[in-house]
Length: 220
Length: 169
Image (cartoon, rainbow over all chains, first blue to last red):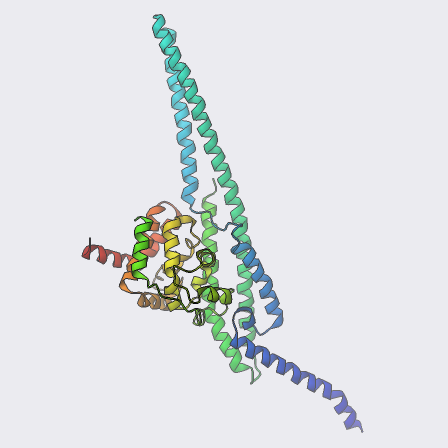
């Protein structure tokens, strides 16, 4: 009688454990035969992977969220343009001062008129060149905002890419720790796959790391 | 090099035959996030018929594609590299993939995959890769992307262009 009671108590646990093992085995078989997220035989990690995956789509592959600053040379070109435009204004101001100096020393009325006209033209040139400086400064400011915005995007992209890679790293640790004889051969296949494919995930992160570095060098 | 000139070079080097998507990621990339849609995009199209915007947006696939599929889609990325320069979506990825890992390091594709890629390319294709890297580097001589392309060129590909130009100046 006592033995029967023990069996009645133990049976659900035994059945539960064997059902869980069958489910786990099924998850491993599915993982070996499928791609990407489904290649992770642990539901909690698959969930994490899905969350990370949608973040990657939103922040790394969204045409409306730039993830490249082009080249750091672009910012240097903008700064050079400002410098050249400012130098041009300075040169024009020097020219105007010379003309004014000549005019103040001129005795001939027609010479004074001619210099007056040249001063007028120099004023116009200074005004136009000043506008070029303003445009160049505005372009640099736009570039600065673009770079800052892009750096935010890249940082988010890297975070999501790292999260995805970490999911596979955790899955790798877990498959290495599998001991059930039915699961071990499948776990070994997954382990080999994760190890080999880790490089692809690292390349993605390296690429975004380089892009971030270019953006940092692109800050005015 | 003018983009039109480079396009002619690509057309002469890379066959205009349909790509079959099946198995594109089996060798190195079953854990890539877009295996199914990328594979579907490849199916039955020549490299010039591929949806360029989609393929470029997914340039992260380059680290996961098997060698033969990498060769098949490479001209799409090389073309963008030369035509769009530093704004190409492949500008960051191609120098990583195409830089031969230095002895003692195993960066990028790793030496085994890098050598498999080089072996899988024909002579004309290797020259096309060299031309693309040099053209890109020349477009951005003072920027980090241009320097990365120059480093990739110097790491391996300069030899092909050098020989080609000596033979056919």
